[in-house]
Length: 180
Image (cartoon, rainbow, N blue to C red; front, side):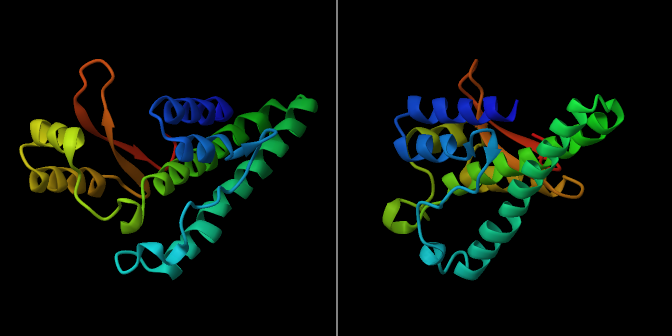
């Protein structure tokens, strides 16, 4: 299932014309193993908004922990399947979901950051700005609602601005504990 999600992300990215995103999404899994994607910018490229040391720590340590844990638990699941150990399989699936979800969410997170030299650090414009204003009234109202939604997640989790394929509206979606 995780490979399907990564492939879907790659296809969506390719369809939207972003070859950088398609390449990043498609390279996050190699022969069934998750891999830590390279960032398309230097760790310090987002300064002063985000510290280069924080970016490096978050990428190399935090995200990589999700990658390594996903791979570890996936190998354990294969062993449990070959041993017909249903109890172990049942115990491992939530761990695979958690760490795989953390890996995919972080991969999407990196894709949505960019240094100023690559168009980052500026408020949304064009169709995205229009959709946010239509859905939320103003950028300030959107930010307030987004932060409120994110603060409502107990423990760890994510908030995303997503586009509803049926209506075209933008919506705030939250997912607790990386199990998106």
